[in-house]
Length: 305
Image 1 (cartoon, rainbow, N blue to C red):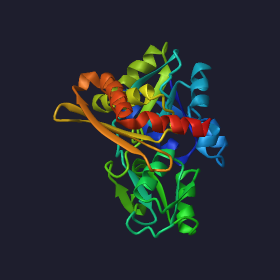
Image 2 (tube, rainbow, N blue to C red; image 1 turned 90 degrees about the vertical axis):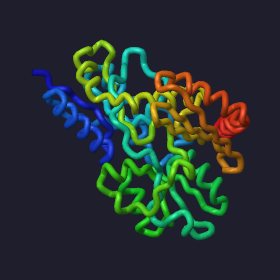
Image 3 (cartoon, rainbow, N blue to C red; image 1 turned 180 degrees about the horizontal axis):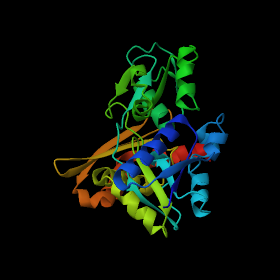
Image 4 (cartoon, rainbow, N blue to C red; image 1 turned 135 degrees about the horizontal axis):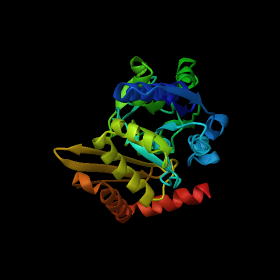
């Protein structure tokens, strides 16, 4: 009997996600799987800010290469790490049911952060939205795994760090959260809280098995968010947030684009039937641009160029 090889990054969170997929796969199909750890470019360059090393695909490139070389059969990713351009020989048969989409603060609450408080995050999106709310804060780039980031608060090096709530929940660290930030306060990243599984297009057996783990509602939301990201040509280092969800049989999409210094902020909402997810994402891109997002995106591009 075939034993599937699941490729994953080596962080605690990535291994948790791969193990979760392994258990779901066994429960749904009885198929055994083993986990293979692969070090990605993003893991090797822990010290450099993502804006400097170019965020696009740095956490999945080596996993996709291993898939194409057939040294693994599946790769487990956080959706927010996956670029909108997908290699033609690879496919995503499963988007697992989404966990909490929200960001959170560890250390103290937003209201209790003193003037000039030092806050760490690796995300330009989080930095931009936080400085829009609190221009007085000292926002610092912070890389590393969850443990590393939490230690920076414990040691007093940072007053607070901002991370995805889903990651802390998965690692059993929810008690460390000081405040959960609603999407109205900080719009999540495209795909935040969702896990996807990739395999070779030609591996029909693996694709059929993985399809059993696919959550239709989550996939619908992800399609809308990623269509927006693609239309705005944004990698993971564009200060943009999006949150799609199905409510009362209608697909809602909230999205924002924020300048790096937080001074400009454009936010919009659009709706569509769930079977028009991609069209909704593309329409939202046009709505944002008409509302003033184009100049913000051009400025970010100039700063990075």
